Amino acid sequence: MIQGGLDEDWPSSIKEAIEPFKQGHLIPGPPVFYAAIPEHGIWVPSRKVELEAEESSALIDLHPEDRPPYGLITSQSCEVVEERDPPLQPWVQIAPVYKVEEDSKLLARDFIARLDPPDLKDGPWVVDLRIEMPVEKSLLVGVTPVEAFCNDAGYEELGEKLGYRRGRPALHGVFHELFGVTMGQMKTGDKPGRKRARRVREQIYKLALRIESGTRLQPQAAGLYIVTAGSPNAEAKELFDEWWDLAREVGKEHGLELLPNRWLDADSLEIPLAEYEKLIEIRNPLY
Image (cartoon, rainbow, N blue to C red):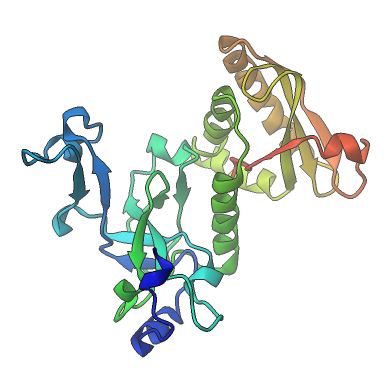
């Protein structure tokens, strides 16, 4: 059905418009729309819609004045600017971007990514990944992309976060509390704490979860492998020891025994490859 509506020859204006865009670029005033049943509405705008007699659901489309100031392209760059001819991807995905307070609890959530736009002031600016809207590439005609980061490292980290969200394994909610919330707090406290988190995260090659007892959805005992690029220093060990003290209590509340942290050097793994491949990679919340 979709392919039948695509012509082989796209308007030249589209090809010119999409050429400068990539994943992570911002566009101003993106549309925000979704389907809902107003009677059971969750978000406030959902409950404000009045249905016609023959309607059972509604398409909510926020008024331009209520839209976020920017949207971020979450589609992969290769899907935004296609090299194939004829192209096959008429849409890109957009997530809302807005400002929050420096002490906002949202900054610790795994569905929020902090941005560093060089031309936008009075942040912090964040992208909210709880909702993504498909927009046709024709919406990019006449639009100049706005940089979300000052360097390539920011775009690479964003790509990793998006890839993790889409490819992450099904896990019990306690793991979000342990890593996304509890460990995330290590980087959102006072200024010295945030600086320490930045220093430590540069040493981390990968974080991986091991479930010793139970299953991913019904875990009984689990622990964290901290894979470092070289030997970890005292500051890194201190931070993860502090996290373990906090996280162990959170685990108890959910009936989970959090086993002691284990450290591995990425250059000289000290466990069998078969055991290493059973580990579940998790996103580093210190980013």
